[in-house]
Image (cartoon, rainbow, N blue to C red; front, side, top):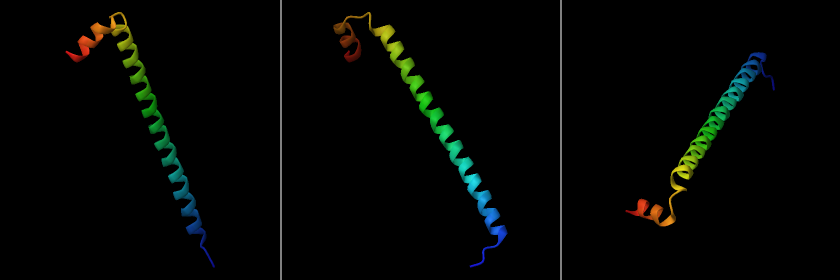
Amino acid sequence: MFISKDFLFFNKITYSLNSINLLEYMKISLNGINLSLSICKQFFFISYVFFFPLPLHELYNFVFN
């Protein structure tokens, strides 16, 4: 079966473009994971700083009342 050189060339181009898109997607998803982790860290730090000095029953009253 004869496959033209142009076809192979365009195949290589589309393959490289797809791999670039995949890398960009992985970068974006990794950035999203890092962002969510930093938000979680900030939330836990804030909750620790604000709520840890309170006694537990005060915290319970604050949350449920």
